[in-house]
Amino acid sequence: MKQIIEKHPLAIRWFHWVNFPVLSLMIWSGIWIYWANDVYRLGWGDTTLFKFFPKSFYQAFHVNHKLAQGMAWHFVLMWVFFLNGLLYVLYTLFSGEWRYLLPNRHSFREAVQVVLHDLGLRKGALPARKYNGAQQIAYTSVVLMGAGSLLSGLAIYKPVQFSWLVALHGGYEAARVIHFVLTIGYVLFFIVHVAQVVRAGWNNFRSMVAGFEMREVNPVSGKAATESASLPAADAAISTK
Amino acid sequence: MATNHESSNPTAPDSPREPLQSEGEVLAEARRRSRRSFIGLGLAGLAGLGGWNWLISQPKDSGIAQPLRKVLDANGRLSGAYFKETRLAPEFARSRARTPRVNGKIGMKQELDPEAWRLRVQDFGTGATQEFTLADIKALPKVVMTTELKCIEGWSTVVNWSGARLSDFLARHPLASRPGTTVELAAYVGMSTPDDAYYVGLDMPSALHPQTLLCYEMNGQPLTAAHGAPLRLVTPLKYGTKHLKRIGTIAFADTRPKDYWAEQGYDWDSGH
Image (cartoon, rainbow over all chains, first blue to last red):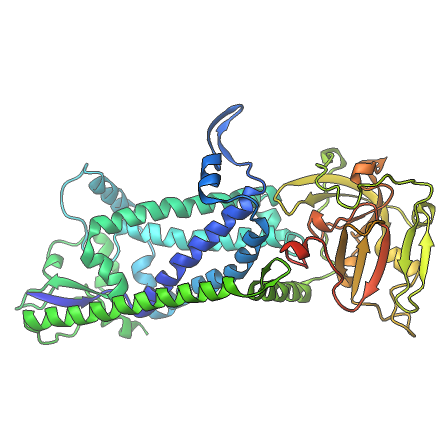
């Protein structure tokens, strides 16, 4: 019979939904800034596969001549992005949520299985727990990327006061490249993330808003039915403690 | 902390058994919680949109909405508090120096007669103006440095600069001192081109930094007109926007001097 199973704590849901618009605006104001010196491309020598960004993109979204506004928004919202991210990390540490999120030695093998499964190359059920190996890797990586954006951003923002940080990035120009590549990374993350959320369906999406999932529960044992299937080794660390 | 967490852990085999609710109750409860949460998220979204609309409808302060300007100024105060004169911009090998792009001609539209040019410095104590020739500046210790010029647009170029430290100039000619003292200095320095069309403001700690130069040579050659002959400001502590070319006047103040690009919506401090 169907039961309500708690999934995401309220704090996590808040951090998630605050981060989404704030990171979007950071990226957008970043594009306004980037427009003023749009030198990055994919290619080699005289061959350009893709220019960041095509003229049509700038025209469609009126990106041009917004450097001052872009910098203003960027240097205001950076505080929100930073504080929200910091609180999220602290919360996961102190609540114990980090146990679900951090990859362990089994996550990488499991992540390969998840990818194969999602590409339709592997049959069989995936581990039915909060985050599978692919999710653990993705959600931990994106937090590390956030830290990387803050550090490379600080290096670009105050390159003399933090010249040691600039040196760690391999110089001012390199710090700018890293800052940009991380941003592209968020966009790619977003595309995969939304596609997976759509695939996973309403029950999963609702859990990031309302916090719970509906599950079939065995009325005799009281255990969620989907969990009776054999759990992968990655679960052992969580369920045996 | 961990205990609290585990009670909500759906996979923990030892989670406390609560009596199962009937399917009808469960569905009603789920509907109730969903409705409440989605309305909550919707309201939060609307509040965010409202805040956004309020923000962008605020009166502008020098090109950007006032609340944004306030945060930029607070950022400037914070980095001012963190600033240390001993932190230096990295120097590069002389061989890496290139000629930077000429990005601004504001304030240099008229022809300049180098013979007739004088640096005019207003004494903070008396308000009187003193004039200096290029020879007066060159009489000060010559500093040569190869640093990265960073444009606010995003590009950067390594350039070799020579000139006199502004701090050496002010030590020799104590014009920034408060009336009646010699050690207490004004809080800010303002500079402008001879025609007053371009102007920048600097905080005094940045102005006194050992890498802030009254510069007269670029890459070993006297400055060309396009790069700010006969004398320009160079400071790797600020974006290129503050590297005023063709200095006409220097004055001191206790309030932030006007700054050309800050009036166009940029950060006044623009400090590195």
